[in-house]
Image (cartoon, rainbow, N blue to C red):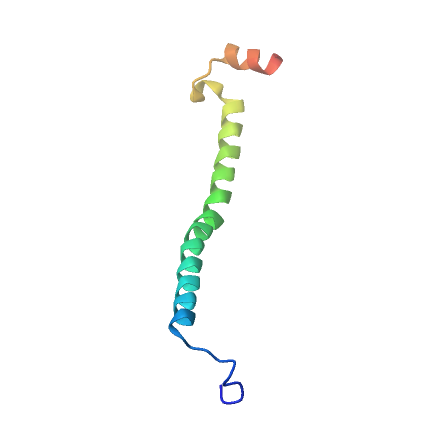
Length: 73
């Protein structure tokens, strides 16, 4: 700061800008953290559900005849 005193500005506007940047970063980081863990869990659950549905369609509300008709279309 001593060497570059002319370029250093710690005004109210600069403090407000830093505060806005920090708050915005925090707000964006919460959904990003949730998606980081949630997306693989959702995809894994869908893959597991699809596997179960293919092997046992009656567990998911289909009768075997309906499931076979959908596959043959």
